[in-house]
Length: 153
Image (tube, rainbow, N blue to C red; front, side, top):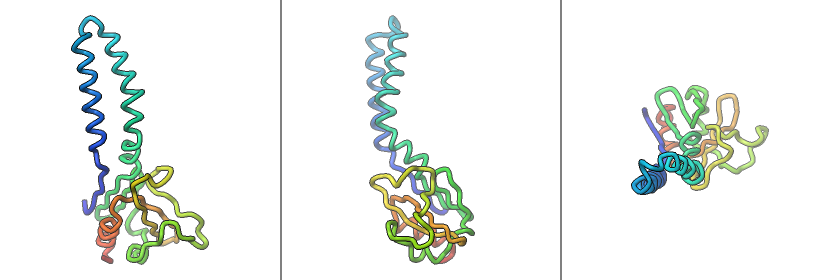
């Protein structure tokens, strides 16, 4: 693995610890007499509190995790062979919101709906001329690693 951009897991760790501590605290006073009630409340707090509080970090983990190995750029669930990328746009990436003549809007890779808050984006093109928007946390590190993998950096 040449480069891997992981999503921070601090928020998920804190909310998971709080959830487990709260459920354990409820269990101390109610178990074993009220097992059904305790399980029901555990599931309810999981679905109504923990999942909504962690929906954004989970989606960032699924859709915006970046990995570059010797032959592939992986963004979320999508894999792009490095041989298909145009090395000239890695050296001088396009501005994310600049007009891109003849190509329409660049396609967001990874499977998400948009670039999440707190993340930057890089627009690169393929050898066929397709513009791709890649959400990243560290623009310069990503471009350096991608350039190195393509042999232009």
